[in-house]
Image 1 (cartoon, helix red, strand yellow):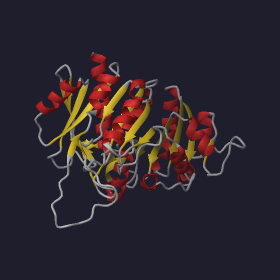
Image 2 (cartoon, one colour):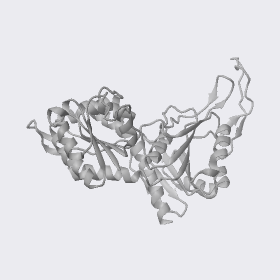
Image 3 (cartoon, rainbow, N blue to C red):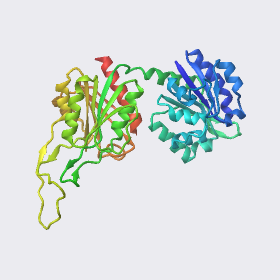
Length: 395
């Protein structure tokens, strides 16, 4: 296993030497990248002697001539760890700034990212730092929270670098998790559909696609090969997923069914329109004083058709309901023949459509249920896959 250890300019930088040694004891080949500020506390010579590997600082360094180090190291790593991570580094990573070797390397990486903040307590609590951490966590970074206590500046509060065993355990957790789905193929439907009324108007819903994107990102982190059939969603899909773009429910139906037979897990997270407009107008419907009547016809049930097309797959549906009563979701699960269904009460603030957070109730075919807390959609996606994998193990 290969780890890149990024060290930024905190007094706690000296503890990165112990972390490098701990990761090496756990079987990692460790290569270290220092920021300019980190050199005020630790040296290249220290880490090269400790790890037996080159240590990078400058963006244009090439330990192997002709191989761009920020790309080479990013691609060959199984995990990137930044410990200590200063407020400056965290905010740059959140903003996508690549102005040194470490931030450039992180931008070039699609591997798990573990961040262990260390700084003055007020800097840690600053709204910019907290916003950066929230955004990085939403993107999939694992945050190892700092400890409370006395810090180098003499103040007391949350800002001390987490313990070396805690950081090392987080690194091992994300690396081991990234192989759970190795060799497995996951198909996810995501976002809303648009049902045209004419060439400029359509019927749609409030789905942003954030939950589907989070599920795809979490599955990629577990090592799966992921394909997403996405409606016209606002949320960005992870770069590692194969994306099939559609607009209408019928297009999503056809695209999903054409792919379904080759997948191990299929998740219907899209908010698919139940009806399409039969009397669609070509061109633009002109305004008049007359009442317009739209004739609606039902769309096919995509997730039920998927179960029939690939009975060996583990198929999970989603049910957005204006109630916490799970009986409707349970009825849908039985009717469609699903392994499980994830219900969310969209009548509650902070969960469901077009929010940054969500809360899910999973209902399984064997009658068991599991409920998450209200959390970010990324955390909710991680919880979702943990529950599905646990249920599969029991079965």
